[in-house]
Length: 60
Image 1 (cartoon, rainbow, N blue to C red):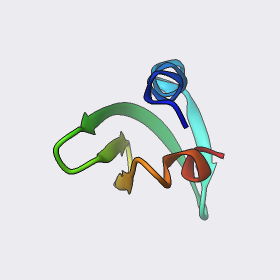
Image 2 (cartoon, helix red, strand yellow; image 1 turned 180 degrees about the horizontal axis):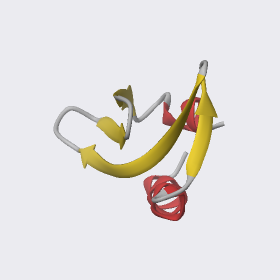
Image 3 (tube, rainbow, N blue to C red; image 1 turned 90 degrees about the horizontal axis):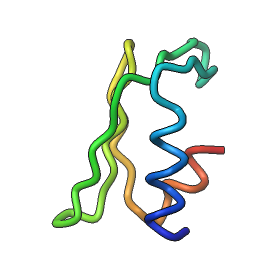
């Protein structure tokens, strides 16, 4: 997935709630780490670190 598309999608998710696993998470913020080629997503419950290659699947 194009990084610009991912950034746009992540920015739209800020402040919204999502069901993941058995919990409802409030999306707080994210950080793109170009050096490690990873995206770190912070919610009110946990932080998730995913590679750029797997972020599209994770966001579904």
